[in-house]
Image (cartoon, rainbow, N blue to C red; front, side):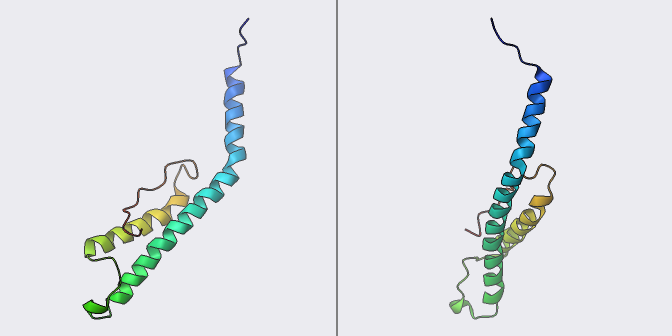
Length: 100
């Protein structure tokens, strides 16, 4: 004979599982965000400092204002991420990849 489960009980259990996982997921997502933000900030800093040097001495891989603006947008997305409605269970922000 099949066993039927109470749908309300299953929903309550799922909510409890999410809340139990929230601290671990928050730590995981915050760590990821911090690592990505560090990469982006380092590239921004490198690009800004390089602008003070003659072009032949520049080391930044950022070669255009568009790439620099992409980094600035990545920084904004990463800063806003922990404040997003679905954090930490929502989608991570889509980054340009310029920093990597």
